[in-house]
Amino acid sequence: SVLSRGYHENVISHYENPRNVGSLPKGDLDVGTGLVGAPACGDVMKLQIRVDENGIISEVKFKTFGCGSAIASSSYLTERVKGLSLEDAGKVKNTEIAKELCLPPVKLHCSMLAEDAIRSAIRDYRSKRTQAADSKQTGF
Ligand code: FES
Ligand code: FES
Image (tube, rainbow, N blue to C red; front, side, top):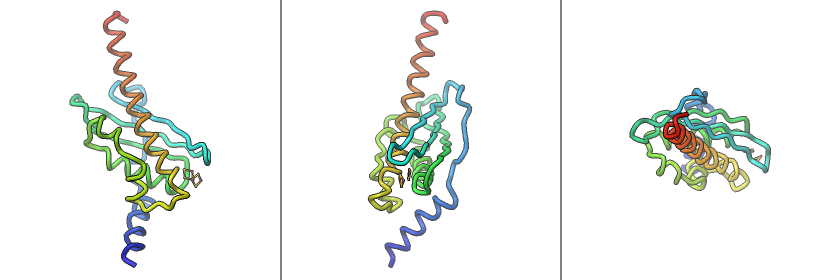
């Protein structure tokens, strides 16, 4: 059917040709790193964002030690959030990812991992900036 062909193409392209696999330098002040795990299966996802001076995500990289659906979810997410503000990137829902990739219900938590990972990367970036601002104020 058209539906199953659509499913096939979406999922297979992100499965077989995952985009933006890799790492960014964790120590860079403009890089946020999210590291999350899925309690259901023990799979782990690392997602990193680089944020430009306007607060826009300019680069995204991921490494996923997990199932194909988790890899496809992270690949999809990297393309989805690139060019977004942190606020908008934090609003991307796993249900959207699952729908775009036509994940079956048992694979929903795999897309949840991607949602958790981007939120965690945003949190890390923000806390780094806050710490940097604090230490500037106090002179350290
Ligand atoms: Fe194993 Fe997702 S936790 S299929
Ligand atoms: Fe573990 Fe999908 S099976 S994240």
